[in-house]
Image (cartoon, rainbow, N blue to C red):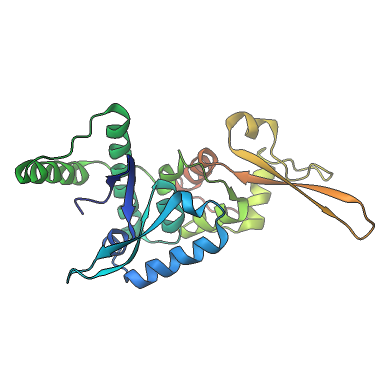
Length: 241
């Protein structure tokens, strides 16, 4: 648990092997989950880097390095109280490593004694820190936007009973999405846009009459993911049907 996050090419990253070990998962299953993400995530290469890492016998095997955004996407599917604890430890490790990189405070140990001292200090900080309230903080600075339905899955995976339809309805009832029927139905309100909770994805298609139809899909920003998850999980809310 000492080296959850490392610096590689001036970027804070973790490895699929470390994730598998920390979350007590088979590495093959972690690789399969990452491979599934590659099929659907357009900017996959910006978050994951395939590599070869030695196993316990020193033999090379396929693995991945991933940055904060890659870890966030992967860890969305890890649920339960124990998994939540590990997520929080990763978040703290990413934050600390990124702060060190930004401030120039990261120093590569020059001796084994320095390396052991640095590892001990990091472990002590992980053990004494008070965990943040919820996993939502892991996506606060994420550049990845997600659909409202995907946000509902994250919230439900952390113990709040909801679904996509109920979350859309709740957002409309509480002034985050436009509730009135019309062309802008379920679009973000001005309040939501001012808070930076959503981005709009526009797409177009030609219908059977030859008319070009433009559709606008609300996508939740990293800040929005944190905002909404905090709102429900802090109170252990249930989004009513």
